[in-house]
Structure formats: C-alpha cells, structure tokens
Image (cartoon, rainbow, N blue to C red; front, side, top):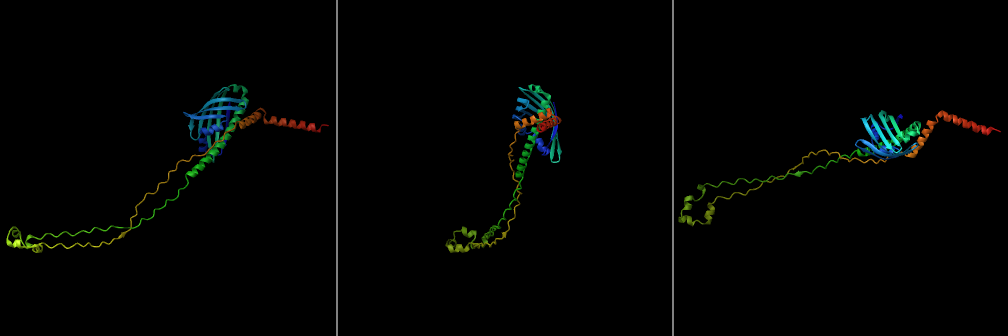
Length: 304
C-alpha cells in the first residue's frame, strides 16, 4: 500500500519539527492512542483502533532514522495485534514557505492478517482518511503549542526596571591630628648645679645644714607646660566608591500551560466513511445516480 501527499502547516519549520517529536502531541493526534513513550530513541505505544474496517488493539514501535534537523527524517513503523500487523517506512521532508511549513510524506506500508482481507481499496481509503484527520489535529496542536510558547517567552523577557542610583554619602570631617609633645629638655650638666658630686659625697656640716629649700633651689627648673595647638577640622568631600553594574536578574524558565486536543475516533470514522464512499463511487457515478433519481421524480410528478 502506497501513501503519498503533503500538508501546509501555519507555523515555522522549528515549531513543526519539534512538534513531530513531541510524544504528548503525537499521542493526541493518533486516533485511539492510549499510551506513547520514548524509550531508548524509539516511540513505543498502544493503540485501540475502531475505525471502519480497521478495528482492534495494536502494540507498536516507531524508530526514527536518518534525521537531518530540521529538514527530513525516516520513520519505520512496526505494529502488531489480533487483527494482524502493519509495517511501514515513511520519508518525511519539511520545507519553509514564508511563515508556513510544507511537510511532504511518502510511505510504503505492508498489511497482513485479518485486516488485509477487507480489500486493498478499502484499506487505502481508510488510511488516507486517518492520515488526513491526524494532520488536521497536528495543525491545531502546533498552533496552540506555538502560541503558548510565544506568550511564555514574552513574559520571560519582559524588560526589567532601571536600577536606582544610591544616594550620595554625607561629607565626613577628618579626625584631628594628635598633638606631638616637644622633646623633654636634657638635664643640666653637673657643673650648673649649686653643689658638685664631691660636696654631696662629703659629710661636711655645710652639706648637712642644707635644708629642703636649698635643695629645691639647686634642682633644675621644671619644664614649661605643653600647650597643644588648636586643630581646625576641615570637612572633605567623600570620594565616591566605584560600584559594579547590577547583574540582570536570572529568571527561571516558565512552565507553558498547554493541553493538547485529541483527535476523536468518531470524527475519524466519519472521514473514513466519506473517503470510502468517494473511493467506491467516483464523482461521475454519483452525478449519474443523482440525475437518474431526478428524472424518476419528475416523471412521477408529471404522469397522469
């Protein structure tokens, strides 16, 4: 079974590329997908399908090969269940068209088991309808996801308020310089004193007769008191201290509130029914049938 086509997404190439590898979005757009996980580089999941001639539970895995980000990749699908098995190899290419992205897919699938007994024509019609509904769901989820990310990014990069300059520091008066006392005068030589060393050493009556007043008069004069010079405090302006510019605040990544929209199997079933009907009854046959019915109705109305 051969499937080929393209779809134009209203999103940029990076947005479409990231959505094609998001397990949450893929699980939402695959009809009947109950679980989809990324394990060791492979997508493993369970699908319960009840669409047209394709019904039953399938367990499958999808392996991605030859990835050339963000241009192309190859997808290898292997699904098995009670109704049979499905093996497919699909090549996906992305190309930018202005602000949009066109995705081209080319798949070759093999179907076996009970589902193969419904006929090639019915299987191809059902597969085309399922792919079309999945792409519509992917378009919706990509637009919702991209809008949520843009809103979160706009909140995260909001301009911060300008830093407030600190007020100037008040002038501080410099402390007064300590007063330095003049050096003490050297003691006078022994010759200037009223009695010499020999006089002190003798026990003459003259020495003994000296009273306290005589000793005080013979001692050297006391030094004059030191008068500290007044120090005038001079106020000096404080030297501004250079400050480092404030670093921009580090903002934690914002969680994106995004809830994917699941593709309902009822919508897929209706699409399959329309696709099967158009496949079994071409447009020319349908037009001929409508004309025949119109002629019969007119004949019934006008006959006597």
